[in-house]
Image 1 (cartoon, one colour):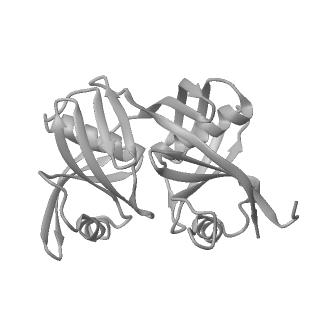
Image 2 (tube, helix red, strand yellow; image 1 turned 180 degrees about the vertical axis):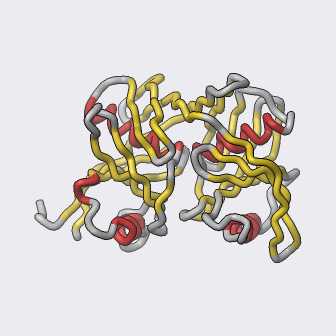
Image 3 (cartoon, helix red, strand yellow; image 1 turned 135 degrees about the vertical axis):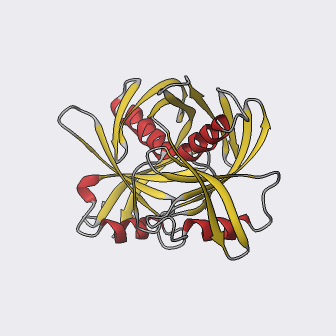
Length: 264
């Protein structure tokens, strides 16, 4: 073992991958260290780092840094990855994770070896209204939603050929001074949709937990779907449950991939 190394776990949820690292190793510049760890050529490679610690109530405190070094309030997929790590290392079937968007309770539904399925209490989704965003090739009309972090949801009949460039232009619009996550959503049925996600701080990813919630809530608000909603992304399926009031639940998988140490 090197005295100049950082132990880590790596996990993924619907293709959204995260490193889980003890916050005791965070150092003086967590943004730079997170970028270094997430680098897919010179680091371990991930969409983000969940820096974890325990508080006085035995809750897990998770501080999330994206692959570009920016700090985010929460990742739904990242929170499930943290919960999987907690069950693996500490046991139990209920995990309380304190994020930048509040405490989230993760309930283990089933487990097979290193594959887990959780139901997560995601809190309240706030629908902030419609916006029209000017972008280089015209404009984008979508719904602004907060699911603990910001989202812009645009409904489409088909995904644009260059949707990543369109999403990047929306993400950096001056109307979003703090940036935003961007989803393009195709409704496939009364309880089913498909989406693409461009995440603030990470770019195109395979999936998103909060993006699944934002996409589903936007479609419910528009009267296009009803709960429960299957939210399909390239990385897999998650199911969003909403009781018509405040209870927003997200059901989805998480998988522990490996553990090791990163040499500094």
